Image 1 (cartoon, rainbow, N blue to C red):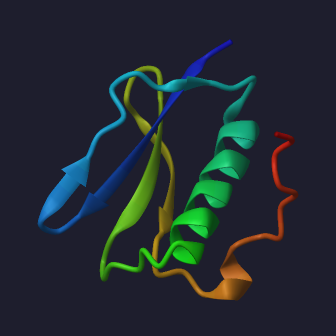
Image 2 (cartoon, rainbow, N blue to C red):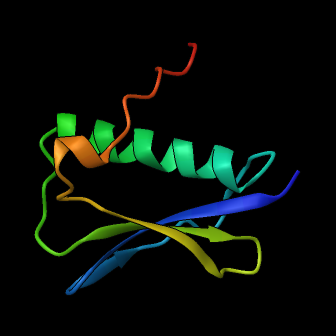
Image 3 (cartoon, rainbow, N blue to C red):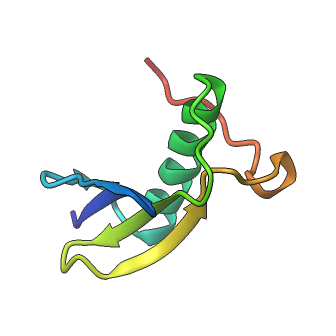
Length: 82
């Protein structure tokens, strides 16, 4: 299963994800990224001009999600089972 990295990038800082996480494909990683953004926003994290970059194992960005996205741009995805 391929690795994906979830990197928060803002104009004045970058939070890297050096270890990455396994997902079966790009779509599953993208859905996880949208959940991460939704959870960050629910926790009050709402920086200007920041984005969550989803990178594949070669560290190529395959998807970018603005952290200040409007509610309609983040799909209503089910919560992961815990």
